[in-house]
Image (cartoon, rainbow, N blue to C red):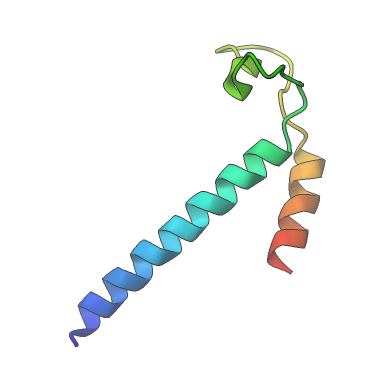
Length: 67
């Protein structure tokens, strides 16, 4: 098999893993609670002042996920 093909396949699988990890990281570190009738994406309004996520919680979650 060609080395570039193997590299491409590894890249696709790596990118899908990164995408899944990023999604779980963002979802787990949201501050604003939403009800079951509204989307979790409703917590952010463009150019808002206050944060909608907790970076300390995100760092801890990512550390547990990787190590």
